[in-house]
Image 1: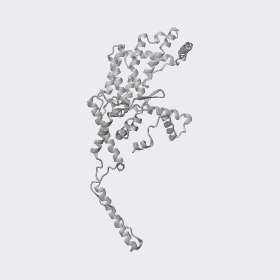
Image 2 (image 1 turned 120 degrees about the vertical axis):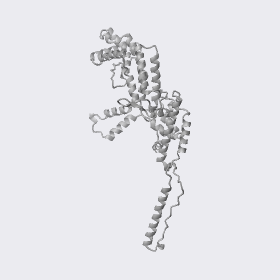
Image 3 (image 1 turned 90 degrees about the vertical axis):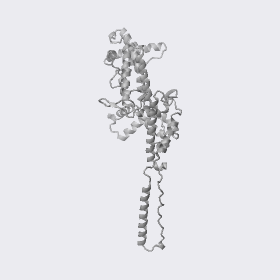
Amino acid sequence: MRFVFQYLGFAMHPEGDDETELLKQCRGLVGLFTGSTQMAEELHDVQEAKQFSDKKQGMRPKEILKVIQDVVTRWWSTYRMICRLLILRQFFAMLVRDGKLAAADVPSREGWKTLEELKFLLEPLAKAQVLLEGQTYATLSFVHPMLMKIHLNLELSSVANVFNPSVTECAERMVAKFEQRFGDLSAPFQDKVPRSGPNTRQFGLNKAVLFAYVLDPRHKHLELSHIKPSHQAKISDGLLKKMVENEKTFRKKNAALLDVVQSAAPVASPPRKKRRSGADDDSDEDDNDAEDDDDARFAAYNRAAAKSAPQNTLDELKIQQTCERELALYLPCAGIRKKIMVNGKPVHNDPFAWWKGSCGEFPILWRLAQVYLAIPATSAPSERAFSHAGNTVSADRSRLGDELVTDIIMVKLNHGVEECFDSTSMVYAKA
């Protein structure tokens, strides 16, 4: 899902003449404080004085903050820079009043209003990106509904007359870029995701995104209502096809356990070797001849059995009907809420816990859910793993072995994550 990440990164860095001039001014203002220790101390002092004043009035003091410099390679740093400047706006005014900061270095009243509108425009994208960067919950199923919300918000912003004209133009450009990248989200199903451009980037949504969306019980209340009926049918047919393919592969690997092998023609019972007592043996030569005859008869039986075995051991019609019946039962059943309260805090509900309780009712879909819901929506989890590895294998710990480093990172990234599978379900999933 790198193409989703790339679009969100584009949206975090709006490009336009008016926005460029304003953002240049903001970057210059940030540079005054990041490039000068004296200016950074002045900003710290005015915030500290405000803290002291709040304490005297019985108010809870706010945290002392620093400015944030946006970086092109950091996806939502422009949004964070704008948010931080808006928070520090009153302190910049204090520094201007005291003559410690030039008024020309600070955005005008109209400029601050434009920054507030840009923040409003970019906020849904920043929230979507934070959501899709998660690694302790299933994220791929959120891609389609979040893109729908982003597109709706951008469309409303582009036609509303409440924004500065430059911000409205920015929203229009973002809508055009969005539709160019993702197409019509109400008709998202594509057999093959088209690629174009010098980097052969994907355009549209991969089928895995839609399958994960359908298989996540947190989204069942939507019932694909925002997707065209023709594409609803295509998604269901595509998922059914995957179910049949998965079930065939599963049964081939477990043919003996599932008892699907049936003989096409009866085969005679294998001959039994006669037991000979020592008293009946005429000679050792006779014994050897008899054993050779029995071996030949057993070999002939094995060849006949192999020849009479059916070539196709799967009942495809039965598999098709089983998958259709299971999918028909799953689609209308009740789902779960997206979030639940744990210790007074909202946390993401676990779709795997729901599937663990429903795997007996929907065994084929359960195996597919384990595949699609486990796919991360972005590369952020793997990038965090590389970052943790760099912090772990430092100059002072350069002699750590490969296996020990792997174990340390495994514990670090999975500490506190509740196990969703017991030994029985893990064996079932691997079967």
